[in-house]
Image (tube, rainbow, N blue to C red; front, side, top):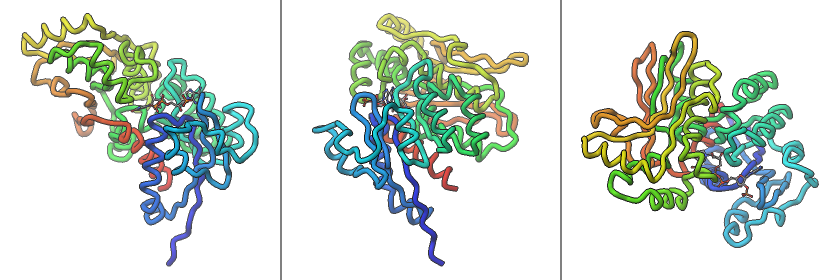
Length: 344
Ligand SMILES: NC(=O)c1ccc[n+]([C@@H]2O[C@H](COP(=O)([O-])OP(=O)(O)OC[C@H]3O[C@@H](n4cnc5c(N)ncnc54)[C@H](OP(=O)(O)O)[C@@H]3O)[C@@H](O)[C@H]2O)c1
């Protein structure tokens, strides 16, 4: 029997490193989506902050947009649709079934939380890599998605493409997570492990910036906010407590941290920015702190841009997920994995 073809329309909020990598991945997996799920897709809208906005209900020429991005990174030339007065207006007019929210991290969660609320309210499914709105508005947004009978998926908010939320949801039924600990921020781990080898703080930070791995504002990485936002999403989604990034104790890293790093190495120990959450009474406590670890601690072995998460459960006991040297392509894959779970 012939498979019925489903047409799905996508809109992108944000077309930076992640948005462009995801567009490339979608193009590369076009035949796979058609063969496995009978899905034909088109991108009907892309919105950015300073590179313009475009809508075309017939489908934007995404290969052409990507091809010309370095030369003419202005989306207005591709606009062939209704005039949009604002980004929320864009969401209402873009004609999409799924909004991919990939705008920048802001600690307030705004304006991304407003975009997500608008999209869910209008009956669009939302898939995001943006931990800002998910950490600060978790309950309200997940409740709204349930009320509107649409999906809000956020695998890429923590550990890029490594399956965390999808793995727990699909493979750990009836499991209580007692505690968790890990290394969740690539930039600080890269800088700490480079400083172990004598690389100056500034050069290590510069490399991470040039590789597109830091947040638009690198202080969000260095002051532990990025890790705190990820930890907050983990606590809310996996441990059922409302702990927001501002409730999480944090430590920062700077040029000065280099001395502590090298002193730890001389004692055959390793300094790591450890994110952890544990239950205490009826509460969950979250912390992001610099810890000197024994060399045989699995977190001490995590070097460079790599991440790790160890969850302690009442079913499979301890389970570790390691992500080796992620790039933006892994983040794009998280969006793709969420899309596929939406199609199932
Ligand atoms: N890079 C990674 O590997 C990675 C990994 C995990 C999660 N994330 C998350 O994914 C998101 C995107 O990351 P990225 O690396 O692609 O960032 P990016 O390269 O800085 O791109 C951000 C995009 O968002 C747009 N934008 C900024 N402010 C906006 C606003 N107020 N309204 C609408 N659009 C706005 C920007 O517009 P302009 O083009 O005009 O500047 C740009 O297109 C962030 O939330 C980040 O935390 C990134």
